Length: 298
Ligand SMILES: C[S@@+](CC[C@H](N)C(=O)[O-])C[C@H]1O[C@@H](n2cnc3c(N)ncnc32)[C@H](O)[C@@H]1O
Image (cartoon, rainbow, N blue to C red; front, side):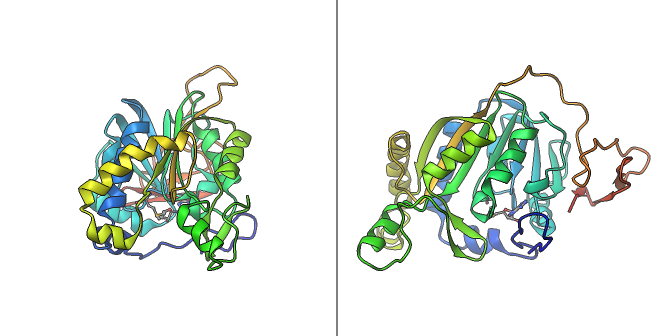
């Protein structure tokens, strides 16, 4: 965990086998396929440059095939190394180790962004959403997934007296260290406060119950989930919610100047042609290494 006191703490995925233990061998085919459908429904058909925040080992990256290039941003170097092994090194994928609270990109750079299964690690969700808003071009789509505290299982447990926290209360619940469930109303307020206009909400993984997953074929559960997802426009009682928002169009769109920006002082960084293994900030002299095709801004 990053314990730097001037910004929120960051959870530590360094050396984690998350992709293998949680997804590949974790019995979550139903959730993965339901998320694939939600993403397909919300993603634009095409785009130029997508920012994938908290990309992890790149589970979702192949789903962004409509975009010409994808920047995979994650705080964990080893997650990015796993993503690189899986997706390969090419001009299409740019691997960046960095912190969502201090995104190392110039303003208005991306014409799309996703943040899937990552907001639940944010102690200060609004601060992270403001960063995403800054680096998106006006009118560009932002797909955000969040863990919903107001889900049916939590409501039942609360009503039966098996759970102390109130699923209807607006404050986040931290169920283990740096793992938060949020209330849909709070998410909508933070999106608006950060400068986004909410367009669509899909409820996802309605049947995340071990017993059901054992007795009902995955295909059937995925189909039923896909039928229920659009009800997210009216109510949200599933454990996971996918949203699509647009960055407010409050100023004319113009091409971004540069690509990376120094996360320490905020100055645009020059290209690294003279020193291919690092980027050096001309304003504050901070040095950012580039190792085996991964930019390191931590
Ligand atoms: C649960 S994993 C999700 C990975 C991927 N999005 C998926 O759905 O398979 C969360 C990821 O968010 C990253 N993360 C957490 N806090 C972060 C932060 N402040 N900045 C950048 N990445 C962060 C973690 O390192 C981890 O790889």
